[in-house]
Image (cartoon, protein in one colour):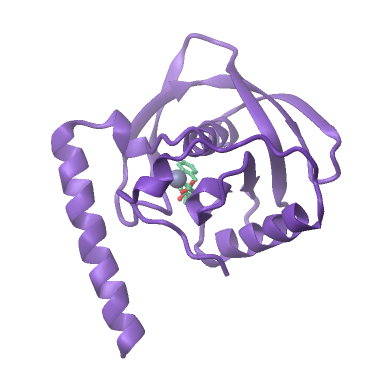
Length: 171
Ligand SMILES: O=C(O)C[C@@H](Cc1ccccc1)[C@H](O)SCc1ccccc1
Ligand SMILES: [Zn+2]
């Protein structure tokens, strides 16, 4: 399992580099990220969150964690002006949930783990999640869209959750 960086860790603000070659190191990272995402009960995970600054996202929206998706060097383009609110969470900002508005329908262009091209138009949770993950690769966290007050509360909340997890770790 890979450790997930917690807000407001400055490393989460790093801009990820494009992946030049899907070599064994990247293939191992993909496997480790998928395992880490499942363990953390996430439906998406960006490499930035595990302190690896390459343009790589893994996602799995299936109920039984059986359909992992891999996006390498992804490009996301809004297809409509219309935005839709969604109650977002983030594995890097534990126990914080709040509404974020994002374009309802987007186009995803990327490579998959075999270097094959992906080019599809998505909406719904898939569109929300890919935009949330793309933000991570650009050093953006969903709390950045919230008020200053909510950002302060988020920082305090994460500090508390991490203390409790430390204690649990000790027992
Ligand atoms: O931290 C991450 O990037 C994983 C995110 C992905 C996500 C954020 C907002 C909306 C959808 C997905 C979540 O922590 S995964 C946990 C989760 C599961 C179902 C619905 C919302 C959030
Ligand atoms: Zn996140």
